Amino acid sequence: MFLRFMIFIIASSYTYQNTYSQGVNRADDHAPISVMGDHYHSAGEVMFSYRYMSMAMEGSQIGSSKISSDLIATTIPNRFSSMDGQPPTLRIVPTKMTMNMHMLGAMYAPADWITLMAMVNYLDNEMHHSTYKGMMGTTVRGSFTTKTSGLGDTKFSALIRARETESDRLHITAGISIPTGDLDQTATILNPMGMKPTIRAPYGMQLSSGTNDFIGGLTYSQFHDGWSWGTQWQSTIRTGTNDENYTLGDEHRITGWYSRPFPFTSNFSWSTRAEYFNRGNIQGMDSKIMGPVQTADPDNYGANRISIGLGINFATGSGHRVALEYVIPIQQDLKGPQLKAENQMTLGYQFTF
Ligand SMILES: [Cu+2]
Image (cartoon, rainbow, N blue to C red):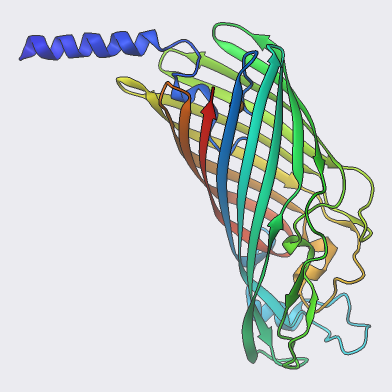
C-alpha cells in the first residue's frame, strides 16, 4: 500500500516537473481569461478563441458614495432642463444593467517575433429604469427595459516579442480598433408624462466608439516551479471624433496576477488577480441623445475602478483550453450619477494548432 502510494507520488511529481517549463501543457501558461493579448505564439501556430463576458451593474454612485433613485429623481439637475418640456431633475433613473459580450478571436504567428491577433465582438446590452411621475416628487410612474445588440468594434493587434528566457517573457501590444459597430441604436422609453417615444439610446448602450482607436500595451510574465505571475498595462486611445460628434473617453488598465498549478497536475491552475481601470469622460455630444436621465449626459461616464478576480484555467495539453474568471470591484470612483459595477464573469475556450 505504502509502496504503491510512493510510486504514485514519484510518478506524479515526475510528470509535474516534466511539464514544468513553459509551454502548451501548463495551464498557467496563459493569464486569467479576462486578460486580453496576454500571450504570443511560436512561428506557424494558429489559435482560435471564443470568450463570453457578462458584466452586471446595479445602483448608482457619485464618486464613491451610493445615491438612491429617489434622491437622483428629486435633486440631480437635468442638463437639458432649458429645453421644451424637460423637467428640472433626472426623472428617469437607470437601476440595473447587464452587458454581455461574445468575442471571437484568431491568432497567428508568421514568425517567432510577431503574433497577429484579430477579434470580432457581438454585444448584447440591457438596461432597466424607473420613471418618476411628472416634474417633481417621488411617485414612480412605472419601469421599462431597453435593449441593444449587434456587432461591436473589430480589433487587430500585433504582439511583438521583446524578451523570452526559460522563465520569463515580455511582449509589446500595438493594435487598432475599427468602428464596425452601430452608433445609432434606438430604444423605446417611458417618459415622466407617461408617453412611450422611441429615441436614440444613450452612449453606454451604443455598440461602437465610432472612432479608430489605438491599442497599446506591455505584458510581462514569469514562471517558477509551482507558481507564476504576470502583469499587463493596456490602453485604448481614441482618435478623432465620430459621426455623431463625440469621442469616448480613453481607457487604461493595469493588472497583475498570481497563478498556481493544482497539486499533481499542471493541466489545471487557479489564479488571483488585481486590476486598476480608468476611463475618461466623453468629449463632445450626440445632439440626438438627450433626456432627464444620467446616461444622456456625456459627463457621467468617467470611472476609476479597482477589482479583484479569482480564476481557473484548464489545458488539455493537446491544444485545448477552457478558463473561467470571476471579478468583483472592491472600490469605484465614478463621475456620476453612474451605475456601479457589481461583478463580471468571463468564460473562454481556446484551441491552438
Ligand atoms: Cu493565442
